[in-house]
Length: 144
Image (tube, rainbow, N blue to C red; front, side):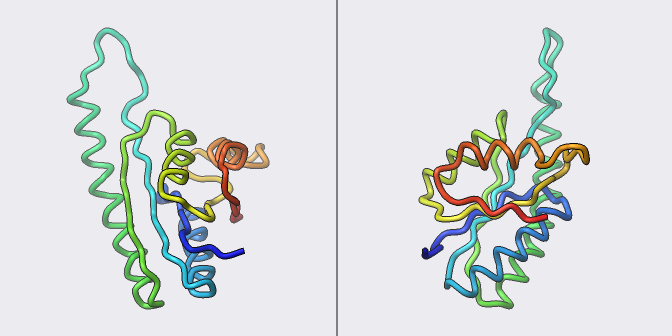
C-alpha cells in the first residue's frame, strides 16, 4: 500500500509530536507529503450571555501558539526533505472535522497520538483517537 498523503492531527501534546515524527519516518520511506491539521475549539459553553468576541479572541491566541509549534515541525520535515502543509481550523467537533478533512483531501493515512490534551489514563484510547479510528475511511495509525 502506498501512502502519498499523510495527515497528522496536531494538538501540541507530546503524543502528537511523537505521531508527527512517526509520520515523518513513513513519509521518507514512501516519498509522501504530510499535512498537519490542528482543530481549535473555542469556549464550549453557550448560554444567553455567551459573547462570541471572547471566543474569537481565545481562538486567535490559540492559533498564534499553534503556529509557533507547527513551524518547528515544518523545520524538522524540511531537514528530512519531506514536504509539509499545515491547516488550522476552528472546530466544533474535532472527530468529525478530522474525518471530513481526510476525505476531502484524499488522505491515505492518518497518524495520530493515542491521547492528546484531553487524554484520560483509564481509557485505552483517547476519545478523539477512538472516534477517528471508527469513522475514517482510510487507515489510521495510533502512536503511543
